[in-house]
Length: 512
Image 1 (cartoon, rainbow, N blue to C red):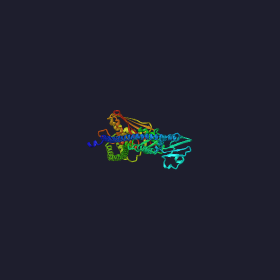
Image 2 (cartoon, rainbow, N blue to C red; image 1 turned 90 degrees about the horizontal axis):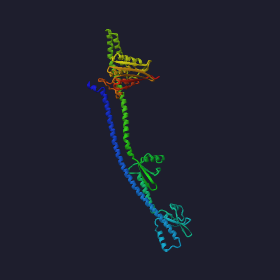
Image 3 (cartoon, helix red, strand yellow; image 1 turned 90 degrees about the vertical axis):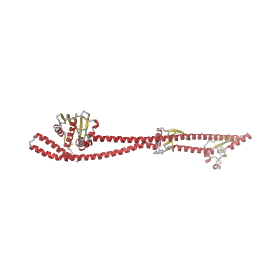
Image 4 (cartoon, rainbow, N blue to C red; image 1 turned 30 degrees about the vertical axis):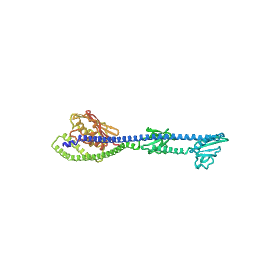
């Protein structure tokens, strides 16, 4: 019996609650430890990625410097070629004068012969080609500045010079050396932009102009339709809003900005633990709900079985009590005593009958509630100590509500018995019935020791009891009778330590 006492009652419930708390704390520790470890990994990967980005940015800046130096060199070469063409134009102008000395003629001839790279032609006022130097073979058949030849020399305006009796024009183009170097520069620019967007750091990158309107290049960007202007503008705003960029100067484009953000892998790693625990949490929640449904169904079966077994076990003693009552009547026991014994036996018969039907489809009969409630109060008055007083407040008119008279009476009786125990056989029990729109409210109050707020819901759990030899089944069964059988509510309306307790029963009226 000592072991049985330990596995029943309040200790069972306390251990159950403690184990739930321990498991919850343990699960929280696992989750926090996993999140902490994941955060460490993410921080390490982010640090490594940041170092790669810094190296990548440094390499870009060095390449940018080389590119700018190359562009400046090409500008110098281009200016030198332009100066040479202007010099050649001046030479042609001087050669057409009548007073050219032999010494000057030698100098001018050497200047003209020194041009071995710059393509140029000289034409008259009508565009007729007079002479050409360093011209490609594909233009050798042209005698007039027209067609493809005119297009080829359209890059720079002609340089005119006067001659005796007319005007001549020098047309020129970049030298082959400069053109080849320019192609190399363009290749360097393309390679530079490619290295920016297809970077070793594998981070999302975009290159935009100084105004932030034109997307020059991009790399490692997913889920964006670059043919859609709105999506491109949204991408530029999003990347610019992260304030991770570097400024570069590119040939042709001028001042540009390179925006970059964390890699897709790092973003996944940051949110993966949360998504993982969310999925696990949903799975555990669903499992818990299913387990609770199965457990409640099993408990309902246990309650039904226990109720039927209790009714069955009470059947035989009740039959014997009825027989003994007849024997007592035959021996001349006073009628008042026999009437009270008969009430008790009749009450046990009714309760036994109703308990045997728990689990069957509820059949509630709309009837007046005041009579049964008053009957329970009168019944309990004669079976409680004299130091316990009762006060009943009910409406003057009938209160019709669907209910099972005997089961509801048992619930009220059980609550009253608990109130008497809480008052230790001394105090007042106040019972009121209130008729409301759509429902009937029954309040049962006492001025006993009260219930701590932390236990207002726990007292209805199976096995919870504050009594030394209690089983913790009365309030649990009462709640099931009210809520599962009657479709109502049973709860603690108010209670505080040493300030008494009020239980409230709410029953729904019959819908018309």
